[in-house]
Amino acid sequence: MRDAMKALNGDPQKINPLAPVDLIIDHSVQVDFFTGKDAFKKNVAMEYARNGERYSFLRWGAQGFDRFRVVPPGTGICHR
Image 1: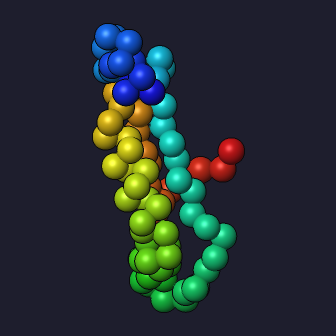
Image 2 (image 1 turned 180 degrees about the vertical axis):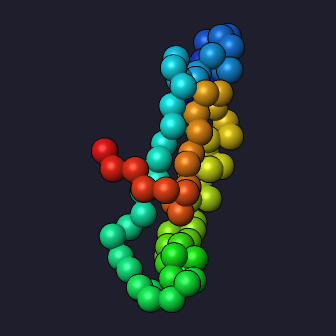
Image 3 (image 1 turned 30 degrees about the horizontal axis):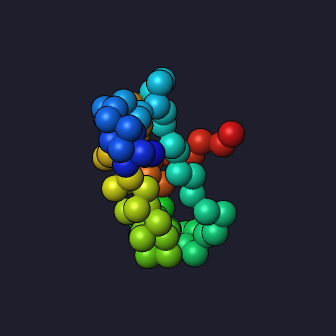
């Protein structure tokens, strides 16, 4: 979209959400570790091992927009 805006001699930086947006990446419903003090930490590490490339891509994409944030997994549970 920004390339199209530029081709039309417009300002490509105008391609942004009109309102603030938070993309909350919820955890997958998979538990590998369920006992021990470090179970949460280990499960988050497994989540990133499985989906790290996806999360990195979303975070990279978020850097190109104003008013758009990506909330990674492991920061709390949010159900919608």
